[in-house]
Image 1 (cartoon, rainbow, N blue to C red):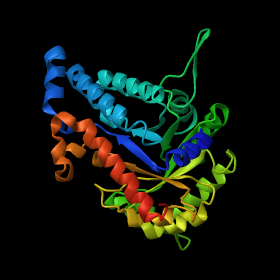
Image 2 (image 1 turned 90 degrees about the vertical axis):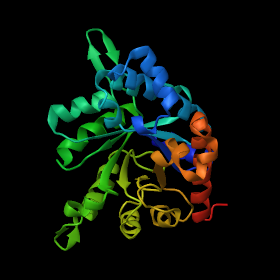
Image 3 (image 1 turned 90 degrees about the horizontal axis):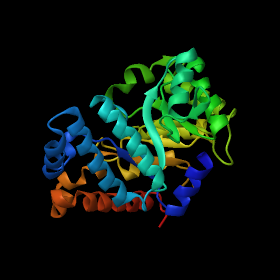
Length: 308
């Protein structure tokens, strides 16, 4: 799958992933009203609104970008109906030819980690039948519990030819409380980056490992260090746009040929219709606003990387 992702990035000339992180506040009132009229102001009604919203966004961007990244918490907040829509969204994205990065941030040990890996990237046996429960192509992983929590995912990645992105340096303001702590003279995120590179040697694709890294766009100087520490690691970069990361900040995450990273934008694209820049589209054309925002982001990044 890592080979397919890197190939799709090159084909579409778009190192961009759209974060499908829906909030009810992002969804235009007519979409919510229609869903509530059918299902009531219930969890099922909220989930129905999310599904209609997602479907429109996916249709609008599926030919522009190589991948999407649904954040599972935004679906879990609506209970079982929300998780049903999470799975429905994954299946629809794959029908549209998109690679799906499940933003699940799981991290546990032993049989628990193995169960998470089976649920999201692998398969489970039920009697004589085998099922792929969620069937994402990649998943985000929290490495805080060490190798015991990560290796079950790597085992599944090797078996299924799928991938993971391990949290190394995140884009949130308080990430430094732990990630920047110095151990033997070096910040923790560097030690984690080195471990990601070592784990990656156990599961290599053609050019990059099945084991990727998450490094936030808000810390470009750290991104440059981690790019050197992880030469065969694809970096997933959150924090562009709404969180303050700019296209100019992104260059250190990429190699000189413009490869090696994929940049996420969530509300900057899916809620573009609420921005002044895209106000001309209005609520009724939120999909068209998302499409234009995706085009603008791709152009912005390509210009910053001198790819045009």
